[in-house]
Length: 606
Image 1 (spheres, rainbow, N blue to C red):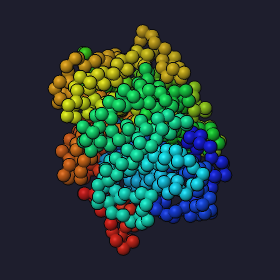
Image 2 (tube, helix red, strand yellow):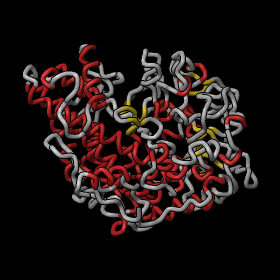
Image 3 (cartoon, rainbow, N blue to C red):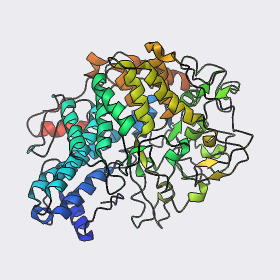
Image 4 (cartoon, rainbow, N blue to C red):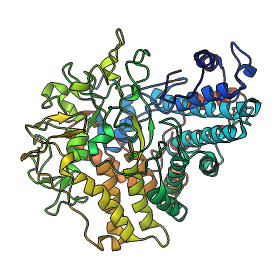
């Protein structure tokens, strides 16, 4: 079991024993701890602590029954590539049989990526259930410790189930009382997710002794997010108000935006777990784990060339569709209706004249593009792109600087993925996400305040407008500040304006502006697909009854636009009433049937 920076006092022998128990378990969802030792051996405070670490350790999407690039916590494929943020880059033959079909909606229910994400999430649920089963037997635990760690386990179970519910729709509910894992997936589990997250709020500490652990405010944020998926805006709004006025990180810092956008994507220990980091999967390198504790979910998502950061493999290449979204008008405001057609492309003009207008500077923190400095690596080179059909952009948010290579990227001898294993935490939720969901909720909730929504969005835009966070030509990049030295030559015509007072009084305009702001702020962070799903209405019910078709319209517009750049989009098509959920893995359907009672029902259309 990999170390998670949760420095709970657990004897090393206990960690080894717990790892062995997980490895030996045949049914990680329901069976008691059977293996080399009796469950009574871990029926104590140290044992529960170790089990809780195990539940946290799957937040990064790697471990349990597998995971890694195919189970990534960043949701780079399911939430980004499949929504138009990026292409599944590299050569068509590289991942073309499994990853590419997910991005193109040509996958089958037996796709290994569909299976891997499902597996790692249920493994997390199984580990949370182990904590809850063991706590009542731990006779040396204080009542306070039992309450707090039980609440953490319920929060983690709620988190993993939220990920499952929004991705696969209806899934079976397995908790610590379940004795038979062959359960139906016909009952709606939103109320159970709400209950677990509420238990986290009521039982967890406000400040935790270790970074990386969730606190009551993290649980509050995820309950509010759950309500957003359910369209329970009236229930979500007071939670967002409390998060904005009183919310704290697990380290006791008041939630706040980092002044510099790039800080959110720095592997520097002094900058991770910042006031903007609401919840993150913790990572580390050069710790004796042979690269296993780095962000393995993104290990193929770096520029391709051996002289570039990561050295391979370009699987998550930002799309032209996303890049063009960062155009701004004369007032520095986004252009949701014309971003992809006005004035050419924000690249080297491969589809005509290069765009020469104003740019939101978040583009060059999100996307590596020709002619723009890339941290301290210099200018991106053409050979950073493995195949010309990938366009001209490189991923940037998950990348380390040249000066951090070998210290904050892994240098373990013999590890094939050493230079691709990095210490960048995986942002699961940032405070900017909270502000923008709060703004959305102000527009949708009964009695919401459009002026508050405006202030929330403008706060995010004000940070983008901070010149200290821009990219400059002929300027040194500092890892200590995650910024370039300011000089007279920004890398492009950066102009970011504020929405005027009263602009959000029209809810249609406000809704469009907020939705587009999420695209700009959270680009390449695996969020877009899930946002499109909940705005479409498909998250509330089965897609056939809940979908309005807006998700299909946007994703198919992306395919129609960018197929002229990336030939791997050939044949890609999002089918309304089907693709709002991913398929239940075929192996799970088969297991259910093999037990004599096929209780799992496949999603519509698969």
